[in-house]
Length: 67
Length: 501
Image (cartoon, rainbow over all chains, first blue to last red; front, side):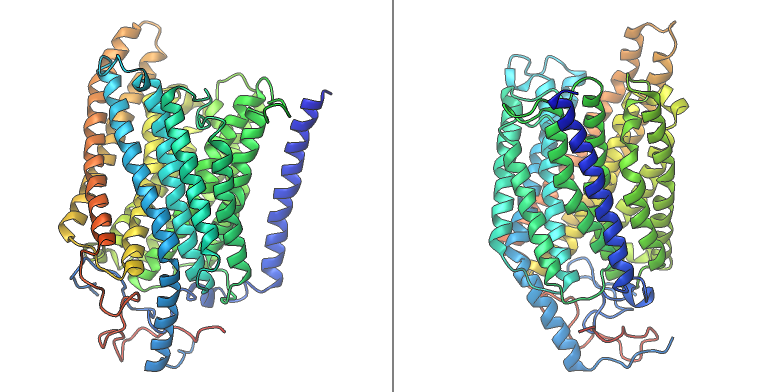
């Protein structure tokens, strides 16, 4: 095996370990830290008291956002 | 589920102030990234229309070396994908990360530096390609001297995203954030590995040889779409659609399944570009399987976006952001289904190496991604500048030019490509006949390109006007509704739960 082949192999195997490993670690962390415990609440995190659920937030300039 | 108590006025005001402060801190870096992205979009569109015209009128400016057919074509690909798509992605990453982590932008210098490095890289890239320095690998045409700037630029933006994520005040990772974190983690790696393996480091390492080169080439090209722009586009859609219509995602569970199945399957799919090519058969077969598995995330996203919108489709009349985003989301479903089917070997026998593939690629990067990014910009920019868009008419012109333009483009080239493929497979059809058959469709492509370009000019005019101070100040600042009409008291929809600390 030439050094060039070895470098290619190292890149591929290294990538598999690093990126596959990162995905596994991220999923493990997500479970442990309770990211998936309350999905209903999770879906509502982008809303707030100022822009609550049930309130459309965009309109053509000068227009009504509709209902 | 019990309804949480209604929010009091001070709570509403505090939340609005927080959101306003975050948007204000984003203003400089995000507008810089977005505006330079739109600049590259205009450059890329001009190059596209010119290249398209060259295909049916080859004598056009044939004496100008830097406008030989090949060069503007490669420059177009680099300008729209690494220029527009990537800069728009970075703008989306910064704004969405700040909002979803609920922290104002810290270290803005990192973002300015990253954006500037990327723009310098793009000038060298597009300029170098036109000057004749392109490297003959599709999607990796950027000259060697432009690449370090690009890698360093996106590296800084990724580092900023990681740092901001570390400082987050919102404990929950919204689904958009999963997509964004994955995209900024994957893309610098993809680009670096593809460069190292296809070209090597000059003087230090040698490039991979033989079939590994095209394999890496198409692994990168496909993953540029799948692991960089698609996650950012979906992150934007998962944020904009619920925010605009004021309704949480239909099934948050499905959205998470969609993310993780994308992460698992998308990177397998690249080799379907080499079906019938000189690579080991098992490689392309594995990619066909990966492409089929993509039905899982795509169906998850499709169900979610459709069910979230159900009952709110009339709002497309009222909201420009929603109109563009939903056009993009529907196209995402269509183009992904088409892509999976296209990967089948029997289908590839006809469609491969024809205009059909070109139509598909544009449906993905334009119909889905670019339209979704327009939706994001229509929502985001007024909240950053504090000014409304100048003209509803120009917005409508933009939408209809682009929507009709890309539909026309797609239909014309799909029809042309399919029959082109059928004829190419029939040895009795002379090659000249096939060229003549395709020719009228190539004229149509230029027509569609001009229409799309008109839309872009309308959008650029709106953006310049907004940045230049034309347009009514937004009532209530960055948050949409803080006035008395803000919250309909006694509304049947329960207000959201208290903000997590």
